[in-house]
Image (cartoon, rainbow over all chains, first blue to last red; front, side):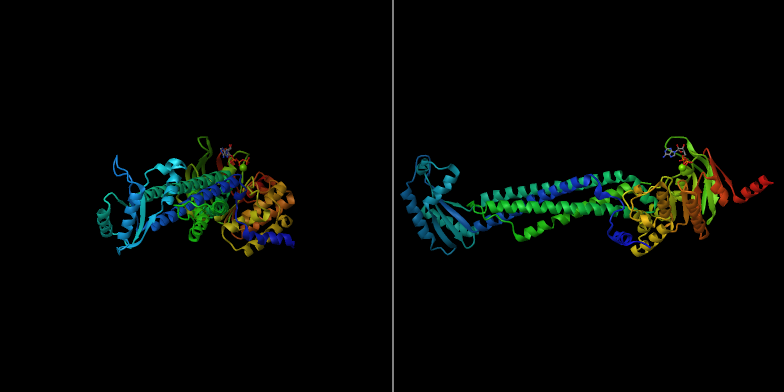
Length: 311
Length: 232
Ligand SMILES: Nc1ncnc2c1ncn2[C@@H]1O[C@H](COP(=O)(O)OP(=O)(O)OP(=O)(O)O)[C@@H](O)[C@H]1O
Ligand SMILES: [Mg+2]
C-alpha cells in the first residue's frame, strides 16, 4: 500500500531531532564560530597557565638548596679589589668550605660565564672588561636550613667579611608572586570567556524562540510540556557548542604545536624547558565537554524561563 | 464536560468580541457553531482549546475550572483536545507524515505505533501518496485534510474544528463529516465552526449561533420541529 520510500521516511524519523528547524536559523553558524573562538582563547590561555606552572616548578626545583656566594670587587667608594685578589679569596673559601659536611657541591663560577651573563643584560661592548666584576661561587647544600646558613656565614666572615650569601629567595619570591598574579589574571579571562558563552547562548536561544514563536505556541497547544520544547533547544545548543568548541580546541592545539615546533631549538638559558605535559593536554581535551555543558545549562535555563511566560 | 458562565473576551483594550456567553456541552455531544464572519467563532474556539484566557467569567472543562490549572495540568488538558485551525497551522518544514505524527510524538508514543497509525490515517484521508510532501506543495484542501488528520490522530476527547470543510469538495467534505460522526459515536465531543448551512441541515446537530459576540443555543430537536412546522 505504501511505497518503500514512504516507509523509510516513517522509520528514519527516529533520528529526527527537532520539531522546530533550529539548526537552519541564520545565527547558528555565527554561534558556532563564536563558541569556537571562546574555546580557542581558553585553550591558549589555559596552556599558557599550565606552561607557567611547569616553569615555576622548574625554577623552585632548580634553585632548591642552592646558594651563591658573591665576593664583591668594590668594597666601598674608594676601594676596588683586583681580580687576582678576588681569585685568592675565592680559592680559600672553596678550600675551607669543601671540608664542611653540610655542603654537597661547591664550584666557582667561571669569569667567562659571568661575562656572558652580564652581556645578555648589557649587550656586547668592550667596557665590560673594565667593569669591577665580583667573583661568584655556587654551592648546593644538603639542606638549606637557617642553621646551615648561619654556619656558612660564620666561617665566611673569618675569611672575608665582605662576601655575601645569596639564597635566591627574594627574587624567587618575586617571581612566584608575579606568576601567581598572572594565574589570577588567567582565571579572570577564563571566567569572562565562560560568561560570554553563557550570555551568547542565552541571547541566541531567546531570539530563536522569538523566530519560532508561532510554532512553539502550536506545540504548547498540542499539549507539549515546557520540558519537551526546552529539550529541543538544549540539544541544539549542545550540538552547536560541541562542534564549535571542538574546532576551537583543535585549531588552538595545532597552532601551539606549530609554535612549539618553530621554537624547539631555541634555548632560553635561565628558563627551564617550557613544555605542556600530556596530562595537561588531556585536561584541555575536556574543554569542549565543559563548554558544551555550560551552553546546555544556559540554554535550558533561558528557554524554560521564556516558555513559562508563554500562555 | 464544558461549561461557560458569563464568559467575556476582549483583545487588549478593544471592545468585547464575546460577551456574557453561557452554555453547557455534554460529553459525547456534537455541535455546530455558526454565525456571520467576524461574529467571534474563532475567538470562542480559542477559549475552548485553551489557547487564550477569557477576560471575565468562568470556563469549566473536564470537571475543572480552567483559571486554576497549573502548567502541567494545562498541558495534559490540551493533550485531550484536537484542533483543526482555520488557517491549519501546519509546520512548514515538516513532511505531511511528521506533521500528523507530531501529537503522538509529544505523547512519547513509540515509533512503530506512530508509523502504523499515521500511515493508516493518511491513507484514509486520501493522502497516502503525499506523506513525504511538504505542506507548501499541497493544495488548500489537501492541507486541510492534513490538519484534520493531525487533530484526530491521538483520539482526542474534544475535537474542535474551525471551518474544516471550507476548502473541500462535497464528496471529501462528506467523507470527513462521516469520520467526525464516527469519532463522535466513539465518545468524542465535537464542535465544528462552519458557515455551511447545507452541511448543518444535513447532519442536524444542535447549533450554537454567535452574533455580535453573544450566543443563542438551538438544540437539534427544536430545529427539526421548526423545520417540520415550516413544511406544514
Ligand atoms: N488576535 C486578535 N486581535 C485583535 N482582535 C481580534 C483578534 N482575533 C480576532 N479579533 C477580532 O475579534 C472579532 C471576532 O473574530 P473571529 O476571528 O473570532 O471571528 P469569526 O467568527 O471566526 O470570523 P470568520 O467567520 O471570518 O472566521 C473580530 O472583530 C476580529 O477583528
Ligand atoms: Mg474564524
